[in-house]
Image 1 (tube, rainbow, N blue to C red):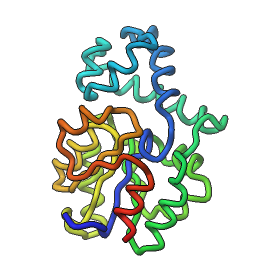
Image 2 (image 1 turned 120 degrees about the horizontal axis):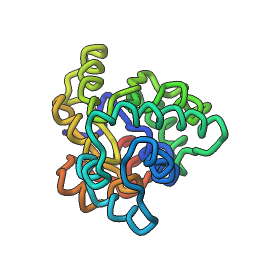
Image 3 (image 1 turned 90 degrees about the vertical axis):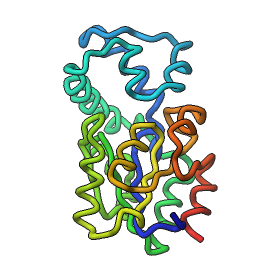
Length: 212
């Protein structure tokens, strides 16, 4: 696709907001309750080099437990956000402002709750036109299709930006071009293997690509 797009659909956790340290710490807190293995500090890097499906297998999580784990994570995420535990990555607030000012529609497609995302975004929430939230772990494709239907835009004019392989897979299944950021959960090697259309190594690089 040619940049800039008409609409950019951002993932939230690990893409716009720095929530990864909290996420891996909270996983260990939930391990006993949901009966999957805990991880030590040295294993975090191993997990960052795997896809979401590989991480689930590595931790020994049964697929039927995923909705219950996601519910607990969502609740704890809301509590952490209210306590000020999360912040946007440096430069993200300016990015959202610049993208919106350039006439590009901004959407957020996330597994997190809209209220949590709005709280972390703060004043920057004004730049977001569409919130497609509460997606299941592997349910973002449905949200992308709804976004296409709601906006009436052709999929080729939309760009999905995320930090995990599942973001790439979901957007691609909806016919949407994809980009991956290097500062989130997954390492560059695993993201490159998923072959997104674009790779961004910094917020500055992403801003320059989107706002020409």
